[in-house]
Image (cartoon, rainbow, N blue to C red):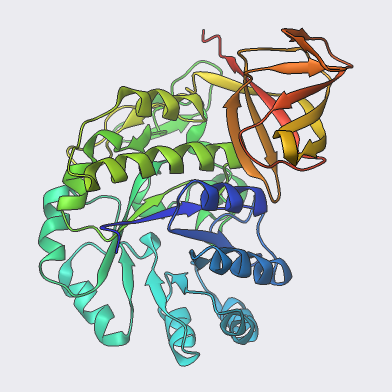
Length: 399
C-alpha cells in the first residue's frame, strides 16, 4: 500500500491518460452542469463512462466533482443523473453542499467533502464521519501544524492541495466575478478578475476601492502552491492524499506535475530522501504564476503575474503514422525542428509524451534539422497515434 495517494486533475481524455501514464493513483474530473470549472472542457455524462473504464482498467480511482453551490434546480439535476453515476461505479463524488451529500449517500456513493466546504477543524470532520463522509479536502488556509492536530483527532481520510493555483478568496469562495460580470465563481463560472492588474486607490474617509488600470499590479493574484521541497513534512503530517490543482490545464501540465511529484514521493518512500533541483526546474517549464508554499509554513504574501513558466509551448505539427517495430513516428511539420529540441506529443489516448529529439530521418537519411512543410521520422519514447498534435518547447523571453 502506498504511503500517500497522488491525485491528478483531468479536463479531457488527453489529460486523463497523461495522469495515468505518469503514475497518478487517482484522477478527478468534472461533468457538465455541476462542477467548479464550467468555463473549460468537461466530461459529459456519456463520455464519463469511458473515463471510468479507462481509470479502472489501469487500476486507478476516479472522483467526480459535483461541488458547486446547489440551488433547487441543481439538486433536481443531481437526483436525475446520480443513478447513472452509480451504475458507472465512480469511486466517489466531491461535494460541498449538504443537500448533495444527502442525495449521494442515499444512492450509496462515497463522498469526499470539497475544499469549498472550508473544513478547518477536527470537530467538523467527526460530524461528517457520523453523516457518512469518507474523506475531507481540508481548507487551503491551514498550516501544517493545524493539519497534524486535525489528523490525530479524526478517523477520516484527509486530502490537501500540494501544487497549483491559489485563490485570493477563502478556499475559493469568491464573489468578485459575480459582482463584476454576473458570473458566479461558486457556480463554476469564475472569469478570474483577480488575475488582472489592479491599482488600489483611496477615497474619502475610510472608503477604499479597486480601479482597474492599464498600469497596476497583480495585488489580488497569489503565486501558485509548490510543495515539492516539503514532501517529507507533508507525508509525516499524516495527509492521506496529495491533490494537484489544475482541471483547466492541458495534458502536458498534468504529465509534468504528476511525474515530478510521483518521483519525489517515491524518493521519500525509498528511505533515501534528497531534494532534486531538477524537479523544480521541470515544474517551472509548464504554466505557473511563480511559486510559494501557501499557508503550510507561513501566510502567502507574494503576488503574481499571469504566467511565469520558463518555456512556452508552440504548435509545430501532427503525427501521420506510428511504426511500432522501430518505435518511430512520422510527423508532418508546419514549423522547423532540430535534433536536441524538446517536444510534446499529445492526444486523447496518448496523453502527453514529453521528450528530447534524439534523432530524425527523411527518406532513410539522418538529418539534424527539418524545415516546415516536410515530413520527418522521429524516434519516440512511447506509442503515439495519427493526428496527435506535436508541440515544441521554446525558452520564454521574459520582459
